Amino acid sequence: MKHKTVFWLAVFALLAAAGTGMYLLRGGSGTVAVLTVDGEVVDTVDLAAVAVPYEKTVETPWGQNTVRFSHGAVAVISADCPDKLCVEQGTIEDSAIPIVCLPHRLVITIADE
Image (cartoon, rainbow, N blue to C red; front, side):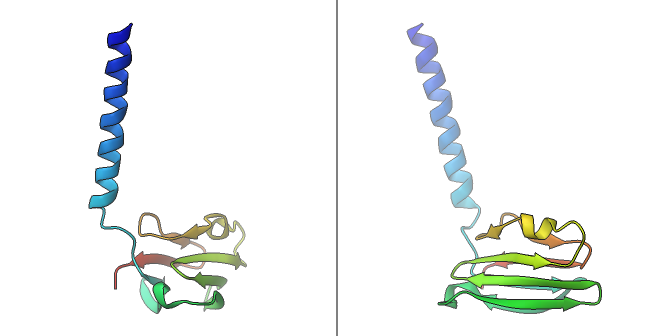
């Protein structure tokens, strides 16, 4: 019984170490939000320089989204698309997962400067 406990503790410790290593190797978090519509960059915002959160409306030929920029983070807070999945994605703070609004062809990513 004691050997099984030691084995599982070692397995979990190795998994935790591997996860930490992957996080550190990923490159950390970015500082610039890049907004693209239909593949073209329409705006970039230095999230590290945002002292007071503010909102901006992004108008596309297919509809509009309201984006909130805050220190180190970005989120779509409203959209006139039918599914509103971009709003449900919430706030992003790193480059792991972008915010995407397919009906409006809007993609928001976070990248290094």
